[in-house]
Length: 594
Image 1 (cartoon, rainbow, N blue to C red):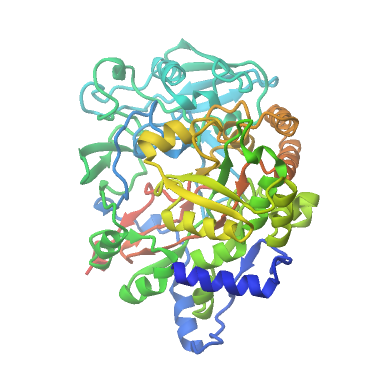
Image 2 (tube, rainbow, N blue to C red; image 1 turned 30 degrees about the vertical axis):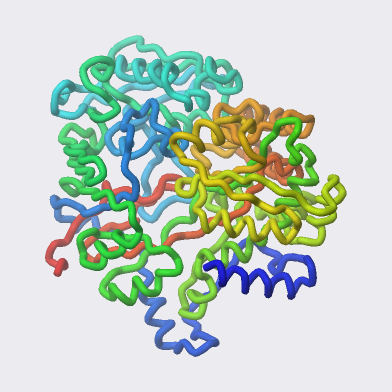
């Protein structure tokens, strides 16, 4: 891989004679279409065969056969199943989400929807007052917790929701994305229960992301009051969602089974699913090949091989991702990156197109007739299509210039900032969750061409990277760090949480007038309840962040390809805009298994 990057970088730099305009004007690369043959020897027939492998989701619910255990897989173990203190999903939750409901959820549509629509999850109905200051919700009468002790299949009451809210505020780092007492820029003052089936949320002010914030992407999971002293939420789950954690063997297996008290009788269609914990990618590929797990997402360079090795498998193109990788900077007064010219130079040093092309194996896939769609990320990920601006497009106005690949201009900015001979830079990364070693090495190569000589230092995620770098609000040991994170339930809340000075889990913490301007724009956007005005405000923030480069968004979003065995039915037939595939509607046709 290193040799490959050396060749590609050398060729690019030669072509651009020290830094010219980017090769492509658009940040969306449609790398092949139709069933064209390869220009380098691949036959039309082979390309057509590969195109024919791409399956379209089909709703076969009317033919569904109930029962069976799905063979899933997870690539990491869990050290904490507690919904209030987990760091998974940027606070939206980890594996425990399959058991715990939230107040609201994104509505499912056969074939998916372009825009999110919300409905009740733990509650059957809700109403937001015209002034936006009170939300009243009615609980479902048939929504039951896990049948095992201590919940014993009892019906959820409003006391469980009030308890869960108060526990969230008391224990969760991510309470700051909803609770006014933790962050005055967010609205929820308190939650009360007038009776057993009613809950009332009081707001300090109207807030645009309130509904999605109480839904799938937010941190407000509903647990039973018994969790206070009758079971330990860190290693036991007793929820009211569709699945129950039947058994957990650390480092080995999660076993989930259908909750008989779940309010929806029509789903899940299966009895459950088992998730072996396979941390090694090669082991996951091997287990899929011998049909011990039902689906796999191959790394892009391995996609063609995986298709060839498992010719009976169907191939589905998924939804474009919603996570963004960033370069973050030490924001203390002695940091060289206090100077905006240095941050812009970092952005100009990165060949985002090359990074995306190689990591997605785009050249080879194109030759074989498979179409990967690649979007260069802005500070909003390319998968958030209703808010994303092409970082190099005309809609970014003058900020687009700072997303170009232009080594010559980067060198000029670094020299003008007082470093004509370049600069040695300590760069921290975790090596797994946020950025891999190869990814960090590639960023180092890009920046070296402009004179930024990175000394890469790997930091353990749990003991160093998370508490001392990611959560340091820009005051960490080093000059820059790399981080990856999902957008969450709303663009402006992501901006506020991770990219503003006052954010609850901010990675970007500059204190100058430029950051203050951005923070004021974020605060105003969060209070803009008109959907179109809110969208316009998010666009304005993207442009201003592009000029300021307080954090440098440098990667891409793409639609992964998933291999699925043909006995798995309804795969991706009911899509969700933000949260992707779920197993509620999946069923198994055992007559097709061999």
